[in-house]
Length: 74
Image 1 (spheres, rainbow, N blue to C red):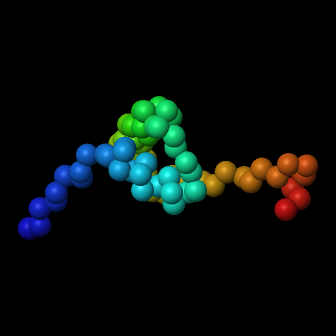
Image 2 (cartoon, rainbow, N blue to C red):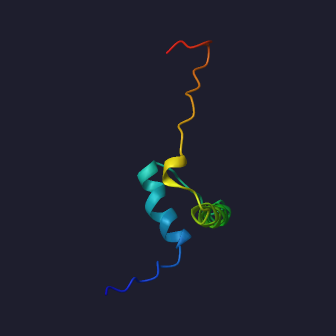
């Protein structure tokens, strides 16, 4: 039987350091604490959503919003 290792704790600073350059973002030293706080909050919200019991077949795509068009024009 294979053992499952627990997921490592979320490293907001490591995530920011890796993703900001990949996205072309510059985060100043002044803004860094706030960005880290919001990344941690987003991760906590993800965990709540991830834990929700949702059946795989229950997803439906929302219709696309196309500004300036009305009716069923595609």
